Image 1 (spheres, rainbow, N blue to C red):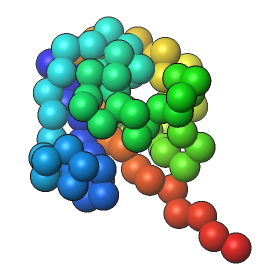
Image 2 (image 1 turned 90 degrees about the vertical axis):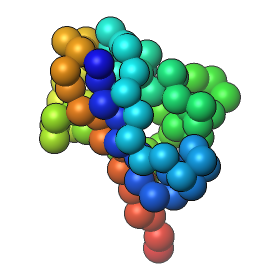
Image 3 (image 1 turned 135 degrees about the vertical axis):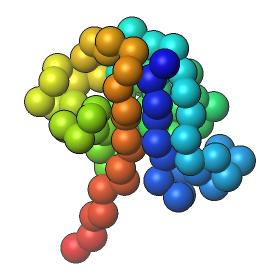
Image 4 (image 1 turned 45 degrees about the horizontal axis):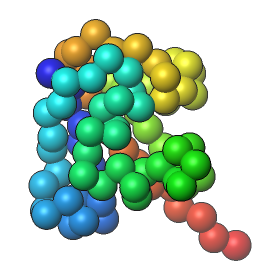
Length: 85
């Protein structure tokens, strides 16, 4: 099982749950298994711009992106980026 941890803002949209366990072979598969996947991916299926994903503390951009393979014992953490100007 892969553990997916949500930040408070997304947890509120997921019925208040911050922790989910899913079966997945890739990061994308794990994220798409969530009921709030439409908030993580845009209408074209791409990761939304202000969403950062970490697997066991490592940025997925350093692991091959959302198609990075999982062994089944990882923890995925979703972190919303802060933007402004």
